[in-house]
Image (tube, rainbow, N blue to C red; front, side, top):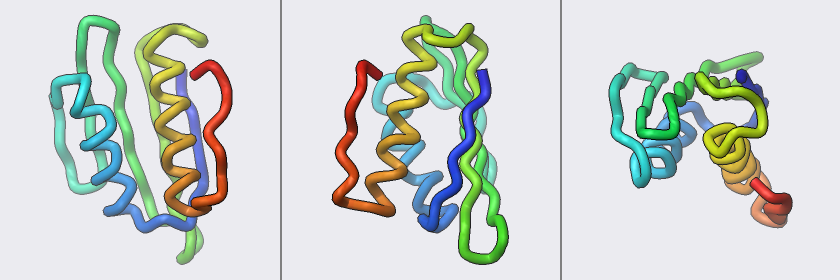
Length: 96
């Protein structure tokens, strides 16, 4: 599955958050300037960021699992944490 999120958070800050978020539970397998890939027993996840339109950052999270798997819920929760970086009043809700 592939998920997208547009944010006002700087690309380097998103990459740092991805490393902390996924790195706590998964092993890093690839590191690029704006790309990280992690792997564990539940699957693989890749996070890439790119500057878009000058003031925005496009965050792409891709997993090798079908939708609604444990890893996909984990990936969607990460995008929620990115949202809270831009808007501290945002409350994370949901089963993911």
